[in-house]
Image (cartoon, rainbow, N blue to C red; front, side, top):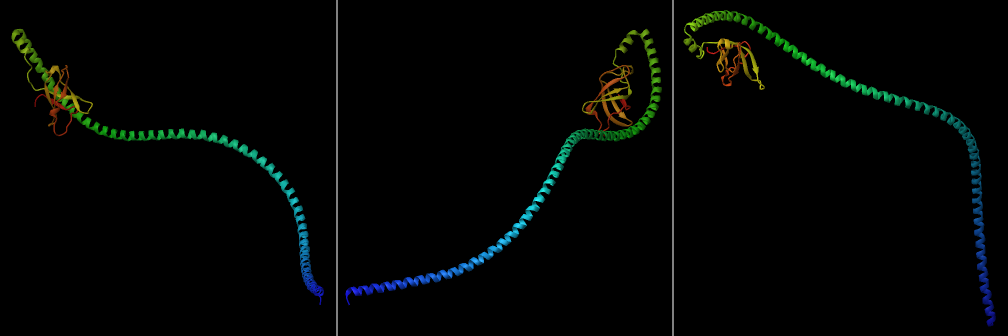
Length: 294
């Protein structure tokens, strides 16, 4: 065989193989397309059926939706009417609220005034209660003082009776002393007429240290509450002199000594001698006795 024939047979063989390969590929492609077409057809049929069902469902839903829209439209109209009614009620209630707020402001003003009045009345009531408490305390103190005064009055009445008795006795002694003094003055007058030089000598001598008796008429207390001065019911007429000391006593109890600082006709102010106080704690009282010697 010639080379050309060989080449031709080889080319023919190659073309046959290539043709077979192409045919096989075409057959495989057609089989795949067919299979895919069947699958796609079935899938499209299923999708069409599903779409039909969905369309029916959507149609029913649309109908329902349209019904709902219509119902909602009716409800909206009804709600709008109700809203208008509610707006009217709101307007009315706003007006009522404003009126109530005005009334509330007026009531707050009245409340403030009433509260201020209440505070003032409370303060007045507290003051009245405090005053009532003070008056009650004063009344209690007054009752206690009245009771003490009644007791003291009874004691004073007893002392007054004793003083009246003592006064009567002292009056008798005074009358007797006056009579004796008149006799002495009469004798001194005779002595003066008959023996003037002797009278002058006797007249300018120091008074005698005769016993003098008196009563405490009043007691004066200093700023410290201490008894400082007393007034004795005896004076120049009885021969009392400045600097003379008297013993103050009550019954048979010694109290203290006083020193005369001034002499009047019927009384003598005397200062208490601080170092002479008794050790029993007794104090001077009006009506106590006093003597220049015991």
